[in-house]
Length: 197
Image 1 (cartoon, rainbow, N blue to C red):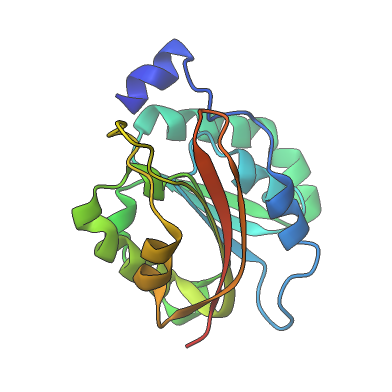
Image 2: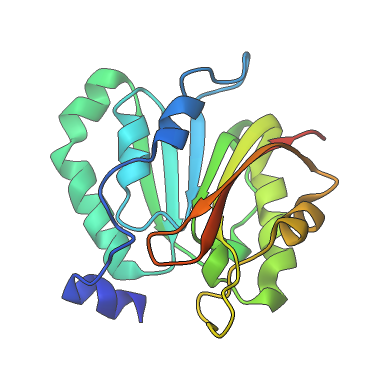
């Protein structure tokens, strides 16, 4: 379904603009941690490329091959800017619930999910949470944007604050949560979660 949406250009979630919450998060990265970011459900790579052009080393993973193809094309067109900044970007076609645990020196100080968890079946949420825990360095920030469930709407299912708190405890501590409204309708929330162990 997502490949078809990318093929037809019907991708309202793919704005091509990095959110201010992400840009604010990189202004004061945790001291002593590498500038490594994982974008979970990266789509066409906008956020990876934004950070790579600011000197970050980024990895984006998405299960839609067409989205990753577009991300790689965009990366090629920005290659000179990324090299000048000292950054890098890499894109993977992958099921994010099955990402292999990285080596210790390849874990991430910043993880971003801009709506990916919304589309993951409930039965795979524990696998998703385990993956996030394995990918994150101690002290890493996990920036998670999600929709809340909407009565009568099955997809995307969304998730509640209580579900997020339970899913990521005890490895992550909630630092902040901001409630808002999703452009597609219904409530949404930003969550700032810190890897504590």
